[in-house]
Image (cartoon, rainbow over all chains, first blue to last red; front, side):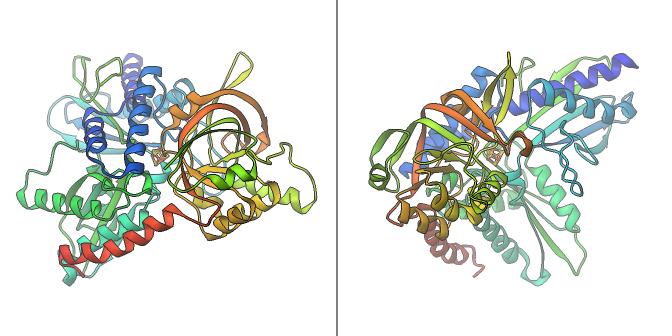
Length: 297
Length: 200
Ligand code: SF4
């Protein structure tokens, strides 16, 4: 039992460390491409600075951004996987340890007393999302999200008769309203349908999709491209200083909806899009899915 | 677009030379201040108390750094900018009271700040949001820390920096505001985007 929780905790710790220090390859590649293609002088300078910062963080093995965010974990638990009851405890312990040892900025505050817990944990923080799947593996994904991008999140309960038109307008408005605040270039997670809670949940989870993996559904993939193009027509540019790179990618998801409701949600990830995943097999073998085990991508 | 290497204290004359879109690499003293430090500084002013650090001609940085104590000395590990709009309510009066020459942050500031900058020859510089390691690299030394009771991120950290940048001048002392210009352009583009998407 002790051993199992030790393994879970050390994997979760490694994932947090990978996420906050090393950007995933798809995000790095996309930033490089944007830097090469950006035509605004100040925009290009921002992207160059971002890339220099990413490289320096890797070299010095320190977090990319001082806002190391709050953590969400997404778990895919095989029905045959063991020790599922220990997972949440292990994730909390790993978060505390990471805060102290990496170190991370303590970002968990009691909304009533305004007291900071000091270790990035507290009621519902880190948030753990469960999905039960076939098999005996346990897959853990961590997402670290800063305040700047989280504050730009938007949920709208639109009029169903406005349909897709309403959705597109809502997304464009959200990008414009967010402006420079979520540290563009950003990645957008967009979800339509469900209740408000389902929509924002799916939108946030969509941010875990790699940038080089558009939605295989042709219609949804087309909407992703259309929204990406529209967002980049705003001219907000890197850091809001003007330019054609405002958004690096858009991921769309959906749920069925009540006939009277048309919820649309937009979640933003800043350019420092921090995520990492690993699969723990029944025999204890650990497979890192987004980064190499030492940390590098 | 000119690139400047500046060292604090920066004179009003030099401050007025800077124009939007210029690039600055800053050396000398940079002092962090977020919402709470701004609020307390203005309270000090009301009570005619002087600040623990004289800010005249220096740079004020909207930043809550990650700091670590190594062998008894503070070290800045990551020090990127925070969103400056939160300080908009204070900055105009703050500049008037303490005369910092440069305000550094991300996301831009508004009319009240810009008016004050015009009057006192100060500028606002944007530093790339999230580029915290690059910023920390230019911090040679943590000179001192004041108001630690506000918490680590909100305290007033006095940094000695060498070639901190690239900073982009985004509000100059002539009343130009790059972020306001971009916003205006974005508003014009909004209509075109609606048209293209067929949702106007
Ligand atoms: S929005 Fe992202 S990159 Fe910008 S300061 Fe926050 S965490 Fe860092």
